Image (cartoon, rainbow over all chains, first blue to last red; front, side, top):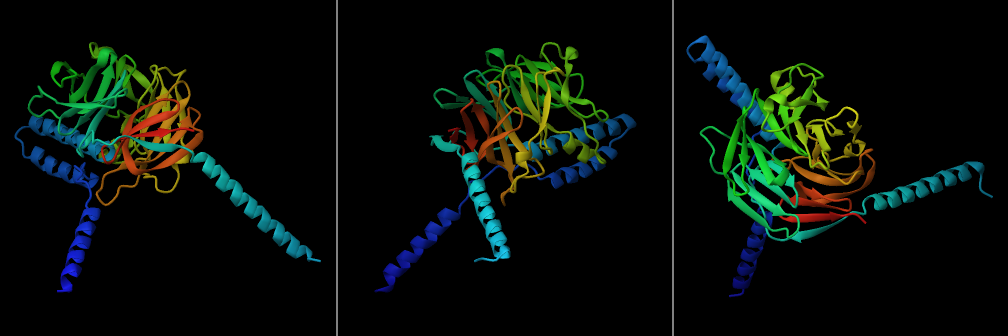
Length: 77
Length: 313
């Protein structure tokens, strides 16, 4: 019978520890490495397009997408 | 009688002791800023803020999830609207406020959009070349362009109704980098809250702050040496800046990203346009950005989403 209050205390301590260790869930800006990985995948996609102009325009789109990724990673608040 | 050697040693120790006391006194003097909570309510969630614009009496925030929030400088009340009217593939970045609370954002690399206070897109302007950022400079928009060569201005200013007539903003200027991604990182410009047509801008990875109104004569560039303190993230040392009055500059220095990976502002310094350190405070919790500032006070959005005010003595 004496173990019951101890168990109760342990549960309370565990709950308190859990609450204290909880952090707000942040929406993450992309990591900078991820931007380069995305760029490489995008270049492969652009290279697979048919025709010179489609490949060229696709390449520009890839670089603009990388620019967007980098600015979010570096200065997104 | 003590020997000369002993005396010299005592003098040295005394001088050191006095020096340490003086340093402590100066440090206390420098750290005399005080912080207080302005509003306990969470005014914005944890989504990434992609744009901030300060208008008369309010600051607007735009998030990645397309929430447009107005925070009143008088009542500190916040109201949020959903951004509406985006076209397929559009992803807003940046926010600028012109006269009469006219809000503008970049909805794509080559398109500007005007937003109403209720979050509705009511006008679009096609741009002549890709732009990477948008800020306001008094009555004009400031647009960040992709670097073209070295030593060229990265910003240009003008009215949204006449994008062909945008003029170059003297500084910051483009930097050399070896690879395309390094070139982008080295030439990414952020601008803070300006006053009377003067805007503070900086290259994201540097400690040099440019303050100007678009003319060479009224443009100054200063190295913020006080940012070279421990704990400041060298990848993006200046996190945010707000000008107040004719001489005050509030600088939020970035803290190294924590385990959760997001960069925040860890130290707020009250400075001058000559880059003098007039006192600082280490913020706990850290801040996401500056909302508005006056000579003696600076209001920040804390990492926990609340309004926090820092007061000068």
